[in-house]
Length: 87
Image (tube, rainbow, N blue to C red; front, side, top):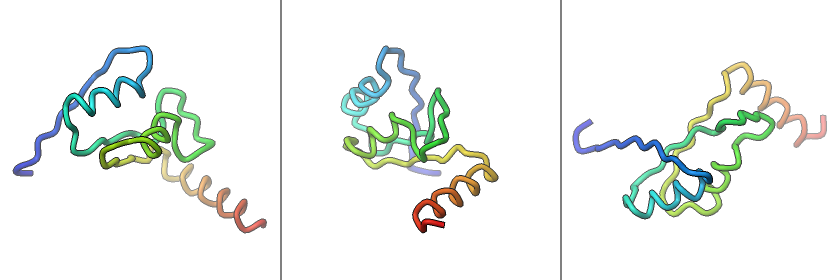
């Protein structure tokens, strides 16, 4: 697309969350895109801890890409639906 510049960063560090927050401020991000689950890949919750941190404390718009396989996503949504309706 014209007028859109995309940058990819590989950030070494002990705390990825802190490193990304710092990079956002240094580079003046317009948008942050993250995968819903990171290294641990725990699919028990819809988002991993890093994504949750940016939902709560992020200072730029956030695009979260859901990474569950389609079948697993449907099963996950059905489970959540049952839990909320009590069935």
